Amino acid sequence: MMETRTDEIADGIFRISVFVPDIAPPAGFTFNQFLILGDDPLLFHTGLRKMFPLYCEAVRRLVPLDRLRWISFGHFEADECGAMNEWLAAAPNAELAHGQTGCLVSVTDMADRPPRILGDGEVVDLGRGKRVRYIDTPHTPHGWDAGLMIEESTGTLLCGDLFTQLGDGPALTDGDIVGPAILAEDIFRYSSLNPDMGLTIRGLAGHAPRTLALMHGPSFSGDGPAALRALADEYDRKAAATVSSRPASMSR
Image 1: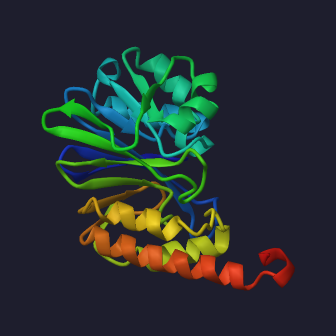
Image 2 (image 1 turned 180 degrees about the vertical axis):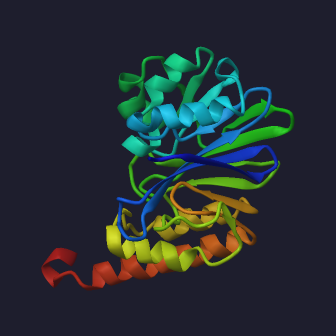
């Protein structure tokens, strides 16, 4: 039976995790949602629709659902936003918030309530000192509509699928997250390799995050910019290798 695990990874920011051993066995795979408390709490990732009862009960233990104000996610994909309408039904005062591309292409049509469209760099004040900034990251790690958030008071970057890794590790680590992420990339090939990918990831490093909140894997506490720059270097190498391996006729 699947169960949720809840851990505070930064001041007022909670990681709600479900481990699924049947995905990529024997290592298994985690699905993580993040709740940021404040006067207007925000949930980042809705989780899969079929996992909604698990996540709903975990969030309810932290905040009454009628106080949940914002729901956001990295890009339009089942584990990121599959349960968005279940959350909207359970949390009557909640509003979806996402970037312009995602809202115009998918969210506005699929959601039961209209979303708030966030511009690149727009800040949402959650109260009690918490504020999140939306950052467009198109095609990084995948999805035209991709975008992330950073909670600025704690320096917590909500990474979405960046740094995805296998296994059921600790809630928070100061160890290597780049090596395991590249291993997962080699297995799943989940990223949309493109010439701007490294540049986009280095742009995230410019926000100086102190905590990296991974959707799949442990959150990281430490030198977030160094980890992001190392990941960017790895993706630059992969993108260059992909281009160089193409037949000459495809490179014209």
